[in-house]
Image 1: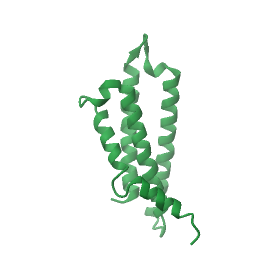
Image 2: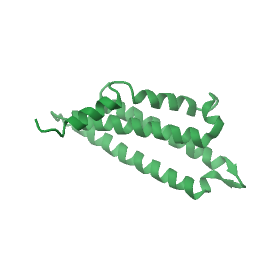
Image 3: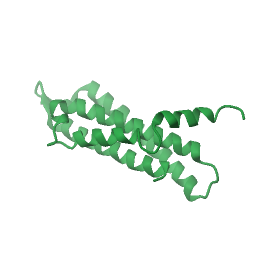
Length: 141
């Protein structure tokens, strides 16, 4: 699987985590209010949704390079894989946190999404390797 394909799958994991978290936040009540109504939680949702939109746009850009038969897109693909997997892990972590204890039990999908998000930071080159490749690209040859 290419880095671009991995990034698309990983962005899908992030999307699933965001949807599950949002649905839960709109049903879970605290102090007589849905937890989605609290400003801090709205800020969190806004930040995560914004990062997801940017990530998806970059993944689409890389897919366009691949489809357009570009000769060099390795660094762009590494950036897509790196950012998508880090975002999926952050999204899953925030979603588990929002679910509280329910986030760790198999009755809720969050438990699996978190495991799946973590493996995306490891497979097909760890994120540390991708950071090294990206960083190395700035060194004059």
